[in-house]
Image (tube, rainbow, N blue to C red; front, side):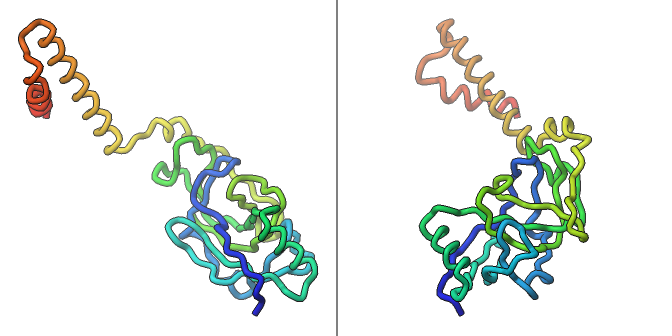
Amino acid sequence: MSDLLIDFLIVDETINRYGYRILIDGISIDGFLKNPVCCVQHNTYDVSIGRWTNLRKEDGKLLGTLEFDADDDTAKKLYNKYKKGYMNAVSLSIIPIEESEDPKYLLPGQTLPTVTKSELLEISLVTIPGQKNAVKLVKPDGSEYKLSLITNKKTMENNKTVEQMQQELNELQKLNAENLVKLHQQRGVVQEDEIDALVLLALTDYK
């Protein structure tokens, strides 16, 4: 086993620069673990410079440790680049299996569907990733896979959870109650030491 080891956060579930995201739990890694090679710049025709170990899913993140080949000059050179901070990016290739426009899988600002199920093909070291938390989408034959724009984007962006709506309503109620009490204070009906109690009473009345 090589001593040239570096831990990586490979990808998470945030929206990438292209406008889509992937669900980590939906990534199948079984096939990849049988041959966990590390490529460079997604060049699968070149020789691997190392292998991925301790690949794991934690809290919506795919993490792994890259073991660089200590007998390979290119691998040692790349290890030093990453260790010294001259490079820091990795990128994975996945084959999308299922994608969804269901609002429960979409985040504000997302313009492409969420990849809910996929198969991990390879993980590469890259100089400049095509996107934040870069993911390369490919078809089984290796050609590029493209997602279609979300058709219900406007609906998704306007969609709010019950909790968000309730929070906004509560904030509006509190503001209205405070304004009402301040109005009565200006009229001389309410004293300074009565404000907090009356605001609380007004909120109770609203509910």
